[in-house]
Image (spheres, rainbow, N blue to C red):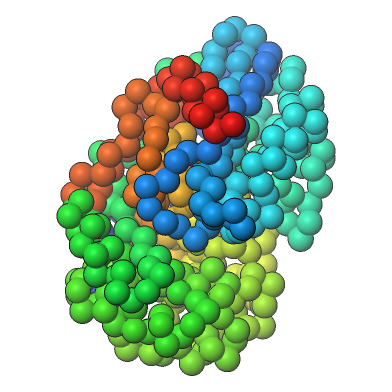
Length: 413
Ligand SMILES: [Mg+2]
């Protein structure tokens, strides 16, 4: 399915590769596996760097009762016994889901790292099985944001060990850039126009709006956005902030205003509510918060709860799970949108490569560059004309500056 008449330009090659996805294996390409077999490695050391990236704009998920918190991140450096290093990062957001900076550190320190030392860093299925044994599930995968940090670090390590970009490990290619969406999260309607102008000044042409719980405010906000940006992709995300009656009332109004997709209108566990919204058919219903594992997604699709998913590898326990979910969506003809949790450098690199490699066809709501005021990599991501470069080097394609990491750790204390 596509939304309205909106699609980003796709080459014929990309289109054909999209069609072929269902036939591809989730394992790394066979020559990657053969290369890995030639030299067995083990995980020798895992170091943690808990930080808070400073923010440059207000965002409701980066606040606590004490005010703005910055963007929490536990950067993870994994070193193999041959000296190969991979970097990952866990990015909890306690007002978005239950994981915190402190819980990520203690989960890694006390439960995950002890079982990962000595394991084969290339055996990602065994790694995830071990992590899932130590931290069991709730409704779905337990502590997925924390586990995603390990998953990213090992993907980086594997790519660095073999001298190949992540996309190449999957037998895929990425375009040079990815189109981004600018996040609108105004406190008052008067704030809206200056926020849009700020995005437009940086070349952004597509906007995602945070809606819920006040439908009058939200409808007026969307009306203003559509007036100021008539041709942009308008993506509404309620983060579970409406009740069913309100969601059923506002969805047709949003459709009339020109909204393209309606994400997470209800709390994640209101499955019959999602069924009702999908039956109503006013707008494509997109899930985010409730979809953690591929099994969750399969169930939600079978129950008729959604038209697509806003993917986030950090929410899903990492790239292994996220890739499987994208393939499920493509197989079912459902929408694959690319989103995030205000990613700093390392997790942003992972998301950019994933979305580029899987031919994301809509603007990605990756708003780290919009909201964050620091970077720890040698070539920070800087949007140009509303797009950002997809890293092409080995692994996640970035070089972490460890002195910048340790400086940020000190600054965050
Ligand atoms: Mg969302």
